[in-house]
Amino acid sequence: MHAIRGSERAPLPGAVDLGDADPSERLEATVLLRRRDQAAWDAQAAALSAGRPVATLSRAAFAQAFGADPKDADLVRAFAGRQGLAVVSEDLGRRTMILSGTVKAFNDAFGVRLRRFSHPGGAYRGRTGAIQLPDELAGAVEAVLGLDNRPQATPHFRRGRPAGQLTQPTSYAPAEVAALYGFPDGDGAGQCVGIIELGGGYKPADLSTYFAAQGITAAPTVLAVSVDHALNHPSGGAQGPDGEVMLDIEVVGSAAPAATIVVYFAPNTDAGFLDAVTTAAHDTANNPSVISISWGGSESTWTAQAMTAFDQALQSAAVMGVTVCIASGDDGSSDGAPGGNHVNFPASSPSALACGGTRLQSAAGAITGETVWNDGAGGGASGGGQSVQFGVPVWQNSCQATPTGGQGAPLTGRGVPDVSGDADPETGYAVRVDGTDTVVGGTSAVAPLWAGLIARINANLGKPVGFINPRLYAQQANFRDVTAGNNGAFEATPGWDACTGLGSPDGTKLTLP
Image (tube, rainbow, N blue to C red; front, side, top):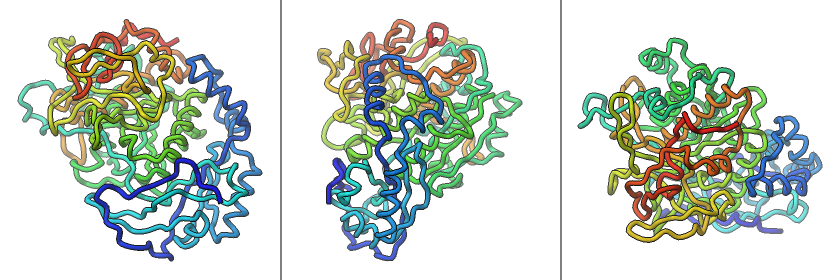
């Protein structure tokens, strides 16, 4: 037996061990296979890491060149049969096989001991230590996810007070924010925007009411895709995950009303999250050119195998010409995790466009001020800092992180965020959630805002811009630089900073040929 590198798990802080999981409980796990041609992929990945252009491949061509080898799938299928596990589905393009069986069968197959835990947020099925692979699968399988079903991510939205109760009249319709940032003319026609959701749902009647009130007479087409059995399931409460789902749809739909919006609903586990992203990136039916993700968790809460698998999925999306916009988090430089400074993942992947937050003020249709979003203790702040998982990408080699009240120093890890936009709930977005008109902020609003911008740009160019990070860093002068404020440990400075990245968009200047 061989341990999967980076698969080690420990109980959640404060979790209580309730004993062995029911051996007859049935579950599903995601098995990630190696690529068919690793050497060719390494060359592609090296080009991406160096910021060099790579040839964009169609989804079909990508699956043929860099999907899994059918022989490896045969090995897993034979192993599963011997262990009493069933193959529920397989997708060689995504390199994914989903196995189903009992707790006992998975325990025996992967050398784990699944147990039940309770913690302040609820209960979960978990494990400790590493996952083991038999010798014949040691090279073919790169990760096994989903045995542990603890909640992996949280949504990055913050609620403001109900409309009409704000202390200052600074809430915006999403289209107003797009106009303030000078988004180019257009409506995203012909584009598809994918949105990843790990809970909650939307009500079509609410969307129709909202877009009509915004003056969008032809409401965007919104479709739901089920991943790993999750469904569009509104909770019925504006305080729950529906707030995330509705915010994402309404911001994208306002910024790019003629685009098709596809919402991929998945369970909130490491396996569900990854499966949602790979499903969206490889979706040949809807073909999203941009994906928005407003969920994440501190790097310290992920296994190394899951982060590696996720980063590879985002690299794959880049090669297929898909831009992935991800919220940087709402808990400032600590990311809400104990023990100093942390950044949020998957925003910290170098293949993501990490989106931080600002406080936006305007008058007479023009921006009058913009600072780092930081509402103080417990109020939320733009996530940002330096990764401990990923090195500094070449396009950030000249960037510095400046401690609050200190002197700037070269980055020691991938810097977060890359870009920013309005996120403060006190200058937030007017949205409709479960029949309630309210104001919402958070970096959750910034990822779909940038996704809408990219959809407009893609439509205007007639082709997807794909992975844009190196090109954005080459045109820092074309951003609205945010130079005031801090997110806790880091402060804003001229140029890139660990609070708002390059700054907020100036659509009249940004060039993405």
